[in-house]
Image: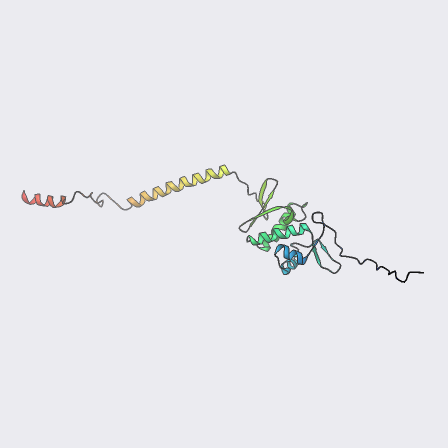
Length: 196
């Protein structure tokens, strides 16, 4: 016989089907991500819907859950946008980087990206290259310094040449004005010519 005061425990309800992340130990709800990163729910939903940054997990009810690596990718995306890079360019960069680095699951969270204007640069293994084209951006500073010095030298020569051309342009010996003499020199010449 059972004790009338003993209450049968309800079986545990299944919680969200979310696996803990290795860095933070749990996933973040959309509300938490919005507060942490100062993003709108609409941005998160759009980015997830279009595949730019999808959440690592979803609850059985379909709610998004973000891992710490997801937060890193979201933060990188926000910083690129704040720096003036369009979402379309970020999307193209991600696709190009996934082709270039098939072992990298989330380029926005795993690679070091920097925006210069609307160009996205990637820093990887002591190399810097443009994300979409893969063009390397490293150049020898000493070579560039020589190019700048040569440019200045050419620019200085061109400027001096133009100054000389402007100063002598259209002038001949006949039209060159005589040097002015001391005051009254002309008058004295006229006076002398009358006396003699």
